[in-house]
Length: 71
Image (tube, rainbow, N blue to C red; front, side):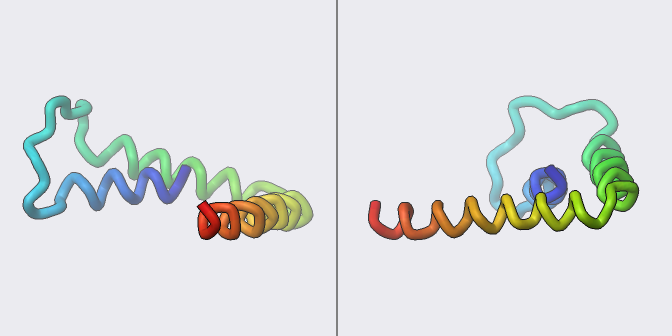
């Protein structure tokens, strides 16, 4: 979720982007708050859970990347 929030901040300022059809109230405040909350949640999580979550993400990437290359 953090990379998505970072992308929102980046894409809002991208030159040459089409005019937004909808703008959320408070502009970049919502993604910045979401990044802060997500960072706090990761900080408060035990190291073992972060490790297993990282293993799950790495496993998914190991399955996804060859599938994408063959597709």
